[in-house]
Image (cartoon, rainbow, N blue to C red):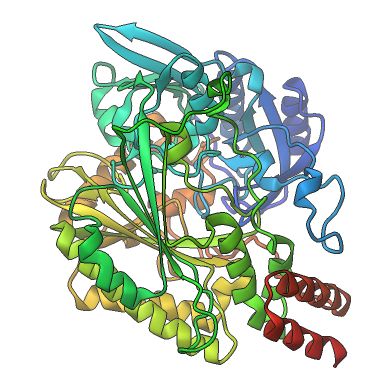
Length: 620
């Protein structure tokens, strides 16, 4: 019989016995000291033991068995190991050090070095308050392509990124199914844990036929339609890291294929509305991504750089332009030159941390957008799927808070009308914010995608589940940098969206792997109606089963107390909503450096008005 832990508060300091045990366990598996760990966008930061596992068939089982046994006998708060994904970072290339005053030679991008196992921006589902981070060494990330009953399958180990898988398959003449997330540096296993999806084709988990790993007790477990089918049905589309997954097998692997990407730049929401019918987004079934960049969001007059980019994707019948002989094998490559286009990236922290500099946010956004997307009103590209599907050539390693509503709609026409209405409301509010030099938003994303139909009493907490076969999902996201999520302006935007959806009587959920409004602290706040509650109960029952019964939950070595609260297996504590990202402040020296860099950037863009405004602040 396990002894009850003395305290369940995850922040409690270890006693000397626990520290000794933890250090010895970590040392046994190659982690000689604690090290820094961050999730994919630095909204969670921890100092813990980070173990790089070279043997997925042995090491995780030993670690979880040992931890569970210790937790049962210690009487102290349980020690927790959380699976994460990552790889050894590389130094920043010289070409990225575009602003030497604000860059550090040899610094590595956090984005390149660590990704949360669940690819989560949320502090509720990642490694917050964990003791050990379990990474998968590159030597253990061996993929296998095989054929069975006339169909091709791919075994994918934990830690392998989508871009790694693209390269592996492309060299063999094959390709991933076209429903991968557009952020290609996410690990496949980690993204699947959150029920990730791409634009239009449905969730990536649709293709998973088998999951292998171990439960919290260190026991091997296999999930498929033939082995543990009920657990497979519940956990395949979203398990939030409630088990350790060492390997998944996916189907629908096909010969490499060509895709066409059409990009359209539009001035504002009114133009988007005017051209929506003409360009037939949503209605003709093409997957698309809508991206709103808040540049020049004041009233009419001045620079009319387009704020909206719509990208549509489809299979291509045409052939791509001929490439020089011998270059085809290089077409699918690693995309870790992520921030080459974001000239203002080093300035964002300064602008977020200084109210005086907030007025220069549009300059940074415009600079990034121009260098990333160009200025051509319409462009078309045809290439292999892995090149075309990953539309983002840039990303940020700064703290980003992403609030993602998944709204059920009954038709593409309804989805398009809803998107236009939401964007008109958001753009109107942003114009008001701009008049006061308040820029609470980094980006707006929207996608229209095929949902998963889960009849009553079936399935788990798949984010994209729908109630009826004919329904789909409009994914609508507001993203902000750093501490801007705390501002009244951003909170007002969140409240406006929630109020709008409630007034329309629309059914929606929040993506559990991203951030939620402050009043949402548990999945019980998201899964509210009768059918959703059934799905949540099935998920909770599955988690209990993975632990061998409720009596073992207090000693779980895989669930932090915060994750138990979020899942709904423990009451939500008062301090459960605290954030881990450090508050951004800009010193006087940093502000002066930033102003000089802003002047240089504005002059490069030919923006004399902005350059003079910055000089005025510089001379004060």
